[in-house]
Image 1 (spheres, rainbow, N blue to C red):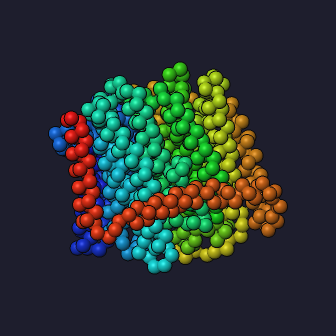
Image 2 (spheres, one colour):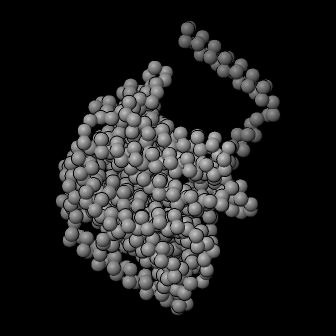
Image 3 (cartoon, rainbow, N blue to C red):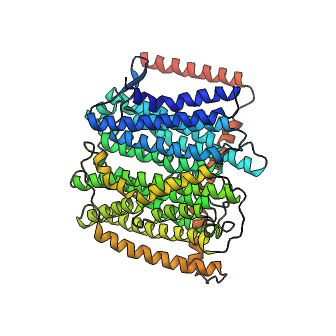
Length: 612
């Protein structure tokens, strides 16, 4: 048994249980126990990473066996420990931020319990060596997401109602995707007789099983990562205002920037290493096309939202789609261009790391603004960054990373993804599909630069219209400064990351200088245009937009009517349920008896017919 692997998994779990008990005897103990447990998990993950790198030998931990057939085991490889480091380290920073951000909350014990249990679940997903163990972690983070998003459901009035509905909405949406994961477990075990990744990888799955596994895992991944059509659970139109952003902003930073929504990306990354999905053309097309569409429509919705957290949520969905695009490119290139496939896989993971850092920074800076100024509406916060240095540092470091300007971390990962897609296009590998991906990816990059410039311009350029409510936030400020430093210097991590993946995918850092320069010119143009336009708006010199632009804006503001589509489907389901309900006479026992007699009679008739 490896002690450090056990600590990564068990420390947050024990912290969740012990903190809840100790808080009964002394108020406030839950947060200190939680901080200690997460710190322990971070240290153990770092040591485990060094141990794995130096020895390059498997490290495993047997959790339990049941039904004499199933085993729950942890055996991390370099992809798994990479994700564990992200989950635990950023979880620690967010836990530190929570010490001040949540200090006046009346339900801290519950908050810290779910926070630690969530990190346990996320660690289980990424350290698992079989589908069943991963599924347990998958469902654990789903449950904790429900609890954390709806944390403020007891608040009076509309805020409490929306928080409760948002938690239920997230739970239902992600459960729809999880059905796909459960189906995969059943069909793979039926054919292979095992759920261990190593055994599945060595097995030759039939075409039908491979197809079911591909579509099931895609459904699970896109549900968890809020890709089309599951976007509304993570971010809904401002007019609806029932989505994951109803939870505390620390929850948004942890779950909806750094960890859980990336579980879908991890699932497809793991599938790339296990299953031969590149043999399924329809799957590869669906993976890539849906991601490309998700990237651009969620970026367009971010462009017109007036809520700072919701802009960041739409942005998260868009950037997750970039990661899926990278994996789609890896599947496209793996047979004929394995070197480019390895580059695409690597840059997908690199962008996952970059996004986890800069989007956590942006969400926590948004939390700092909400805590300090009492609002999350852009126009209520206009100009605050002019007088608040911490907000200015966090917004600039995170915003410029999101745009992808050098030397910030987002530049190194995003341009790598765009460069791989352009190289594949030049090589003529599936030119129609790859060309579609590249065009939408570049278009998304331009819109990303536009909406980021828009909210930065509003927060920096206008005259402040609000005053500070709370000045005493040294821990929150410290966390923002640490993440800002990582966003500024994190390009070094991206360049060195191939060393971490040695033996998993053989790749070296290759930066596409020529195409990156072209992108920088286009992005700079988009920034200048949006700054000019936003400045005119702030000066109340609104330009007369064309009918087409107004219509596109309306559609984007409504989230491309996905919320309406889901609600229509829900109403249809309720209508069918009512029709079925009318079949019930009110006497359940009589109905069951009649149905049983009818079933037995039919069985006897059919059996008799077969005998004679």
